[in-house]
Amino acid sequence: MSTSQSTYLTWPQIARLGLVQASLGSIVVLTTSLLNRVMVVELALPAILPGALVAIHYFIQLIRPRMGFGSDQTRRASPWIRGGILVLASGGILAAASTILLSSSLVLGIALATVAFLMIGIGVSSSGTALLVLLAKRVEPKKKAAAATCVWLMMIFGFAFTASVSGKFLTPFSFERLLMISSTVSVIAVIVTFLAIWGMESPISNTQQSLSNADQAEPEASPVKTSFREAFAEVWQESRVRSFTWFVFVSMLAYSSQDLILEPFAAVAFRFSPAETTSLSGLQNGGVLVGMLALAFITTKAKSQTLTTLSTWTIGGCLASALAMMGLVLSGPIDNVLFFQVSVFLLGIFNGAFSIAAIGSMMQFASMGSARREGVRMGIWGASQAMAFGLGGIIGTGLSDIARIVLGDPASAYAFVFFLEGVLFVVAAYLSYQTRTQKQTNNMSNHLVGV
Image 1 (cartoon, one colour):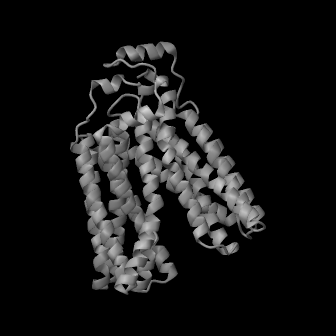
Image 2 (cartoon, one colour; image 1 turned 180 degrees about the vertical axis):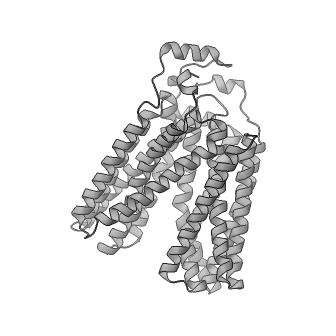
Image 3 (cartoon, rainbow, N blue to C red; image 1 turned 90 degrees about the vertical axis):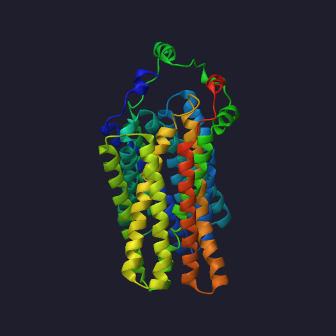
């Protein structure tokens, strides 16, 4: 590996990459939250329309492995981050424009919105995958959990800041003002991303590459000769990749399935008002923040910084999340508001801890196995996460509706779904343990084929 590629990132550089994640989040939050509300309230369209558009933006992210492969081939993440943010920003502007078109032509508006959300998914796939690859390659092992916390907190900041500021400028509301704000946010996000990524990578000269290859324990040929299908098949042969892919899917499915049913459960089981359910969401997110920061501090200060440490926290976080889910299940029969609120807060803490530990493990796993395949691995795991998030809301709400018909009681129906999510967290913990203990199935020839 070249000198430029092997130098660890400093904290200011990690924070700069966090600005990239915040920029991505600022565009996404406008399209998945604000435009959702505009379509349903101002345009009086069925809620299934924005729901389907958000699902499209998730499912198109199955192309993440292909984006990661492109990053592997070029050996540079910066061009993919820049290209991705440009596509994402364009999609964000078109999504806002589609709301104007929807007010006059439903068919044309839906067509434009579909194109826009496809572009949003593609842009997120390119920039997000390349950003994670860059972090995986350039962050010191003991800083990976803390770096993941830094980057994700800045993404959350991007969500909150954009939603707050755009909300003020949208008063009084008009479609023209919505388009102007969306365009402004997109342009600012592009500028911030280009400035943040500037100088983060430098092209690898032929001399550096020759020295790099000479220092490798195993010879490497040019990656250009490999097709995506060959690279994907090569990576998928690695047992750790397969197990970790299933872990990401199952854990993120459990993580996301409760998003749309926690507040309705509080309303029917404890008669929470809309204001109280909003505060409940804040309580849970506060727990997530505590969990993230606590794990980042512990793993950074710990004397032993190994992959096993992060894997242990991942397993423990999943099992603890399962226990918190059981707390939600029992909160209905116990009928104690304080017990319910404590369970929600603990669920947030354990979710935050396990997610950061999982991302840190992902960064370390990305460099293990056949050489020069970090992007493909990260792309596979990113696609798995996107698929889980896309299905999470649908499965969570759908199961609660079915359970309500069978059980006849809304509170019991929601509690049944919480129980299933707890089971999923236990399964995720087992998969994480299996991933940690597995040996790679790849042999020496994997390093020499198509690399």
